[in-house]
Length: 635
Image 1 (cartoon, rainbow, N blue to C red):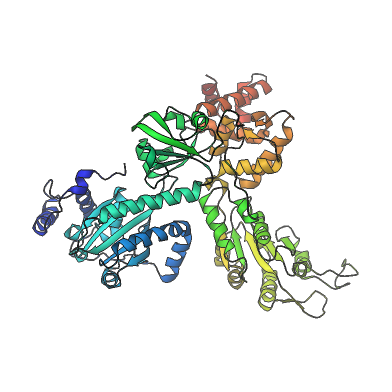
Image 2 (image 1 turned 30 degrees about the horizontal axis):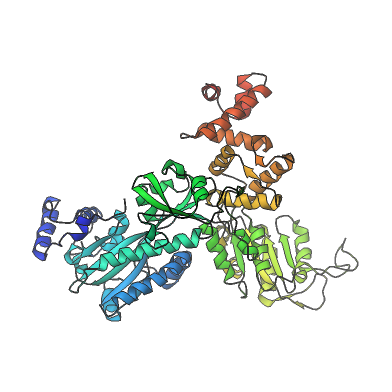
């Protein structure tokens, strides 16, 4: 679905006269003469017209990022940029002194980075072909970047094929960049003056795109189980090979574009399909034989395959975890079990651990904000000093001030005779973590702000001010910016706390559930090969987890406690009743169930019927479904 047909790549470009004729026909009749334009260009012209663009005009309100917005976009796409820069430098070496530039845009059409000829870059900047500009078709009409995003395939747009005539001096070749999870990440583009020689630009940018996708795959799955594919044995281990990331059961966890094309798989196969559904040899057989081997019965005929990252041979013991766990380097690394969004936040936090920049953690209850804060402390230069956590929502309002700032003996009724230093002073040299800061009373917010500004605290009851030295991390499940707008949180304190804001994703949005479960089971029962039953693993993957990681950890902790000594697989009997009811409802409402989910739902309903002595109405009430739904499921 991504391959550019050879005929289209070799097709001669229409001359200026033909393009003017096609443009006139488009404006007058609504369509150019058949066969005059490349199909992708013709479709893009139609879309440009539908967006309200005029060939001789300029679109109003074209978005262009400010310097700060561009920096934020680059920060959010740090992993893509890190892998893309060496590839862009390679391409730049190939086009040096050719009057061309190589650019990277994100999936929303924003240009993130550019390298190349300074003279042409200045000329290109006149039409906003520079970082920060947005080149989606709706704003710029037909162009290689926007049209490659719209078409989802490599293509070239030359001269007058650009819908806006002001861009007609350009010739551009672009290819989409797909991540190992099947998502479109952006576009790699080579642009130059249309009067130059650019016969190989499309081939070069396609090769560079494959190289970048190969690097993205290795960065994500290089430590796991990988299947390499190619039509020739010599192609294995090169940048033109197909790559699949697999779990020990043969489920496809990741794939590069070449592998999906070779096996004729949709991008949706990633995370859903099993290898044995598309290849005759499953993981066990590939591991058994070892080394490169011919695989029959694929969509592309015979392919050569090699399985890397797995133990081979008949004596190899099965690997119990669903995901291979890398050896952790520090506390933050232990939190990274494969989710890209969380990994990005970890990388951002790591960059400021040795700097006097406060962290503000936002996220739903249960996502692990305190765990993240403690990992930041344990991974930073203050790891040997105290980590002091204060839950601002759990302290009575009358005690917060004394708890935080300390007091002299006899400062108030009930005060200890010897006084107390306060949590701020206890954190000396280490890290102070203020959890649920959004619940702190406004009056206390003012004093906390003053303490943070002056870096001194005066205990209640008087006494000399005491200097403070600690790293500050605050957290809240409440949206603090909204609280500021509502007048419920001080704006000046918000900006004092918000040196770097990190939003931790809820569990339902994370892609690393299997790895997280494997890590939690390993922590709960070190050395014991525990796994989830397949039906439960699938039900867990579809569950919304309103309590997030905290709920998942508690469920697994209970399940491990209920296991017999000789049991290694968690099944529904080991789960709490309320979660079983939720999973049953989830299975009952799912329009497309698998056999495992149907089995789980059926077992739960049969058990409830037994508990209710065959009373269908009572069983339906307890399960939270209608009698008709229960009857239908039982049938």
